Image (cartoon, rainbow, N blue to C red):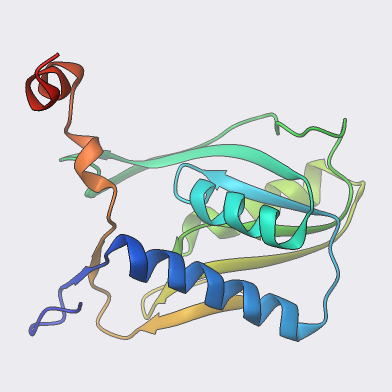
Length: 174
């Protein structure tokens, strides 16, 4: 649900999963065949996992991080992992790069540049996200929703960002 001022988008678990399914349909309808999904952790892990299951292809993971301050709402320096975790040796062939959103576009551009420069066995690379913001300088190959007001997206699991084990003990009276 987008707030009236267009500054916040609140997404339920059902909406989130429906959007991932719509992303799968877009990729499928394009006719493009790929060998591996490479998801960007953490935002791309949930969509990557679901797409990996739907398309029955291996899931590789690359960690990136740029949101660090104020419960993840202030963008800082981009860190990209030097290694990719994959169940099949080295990542190769046609790769679908998955993240949750193209926000500024900086992360996706930097990751694609790193992949093109350092992973010669990748023969083709395409990108897929749930949301693309107007301000993004990167246009993914596949995207479900375009957000012209650049809202802050409140994903259904963000409550865990501030939850700690003591709070779970209290919640569950363990």
